[in-house]
Image 1 (cartoon, one colour):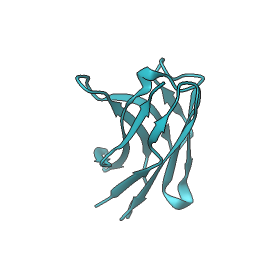
Image 2 (spheres, rainbow, N blue to C red):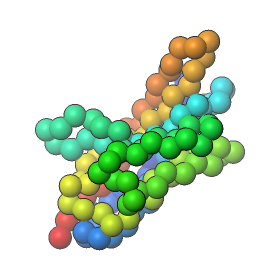
Image 3 (spheres, one colour):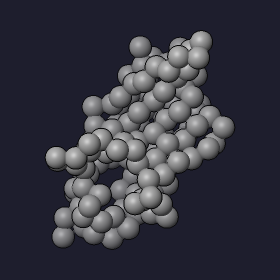
Image 4 (cartoon, helix red, strand yellow):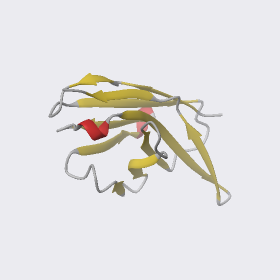
Length: 119
């Protein structure tokens, strides 16, 4: 059973930067996709960025050019570098990991870390 632990959230002013980290433990099979989702109060959880084992990335349109997802596969750790933060980036950010075993997806979630952008 994979466990995901996020860190790096906090309070920042508009235009500032934060770097989120997510470390996976209990990994017996390779993780095929790691990513970040976020959920603001009253909103649905949405994809922010994801990165596959083949280094394919996917970003939400609202964060393209500002956020960057990277991964250290040797450490089972994913990072989300967030620059030029805006008030609308305020949300709880969740780490996500997916494994495919015999073609079936297995999804894992972290508990989330709060990011607040406040002037």
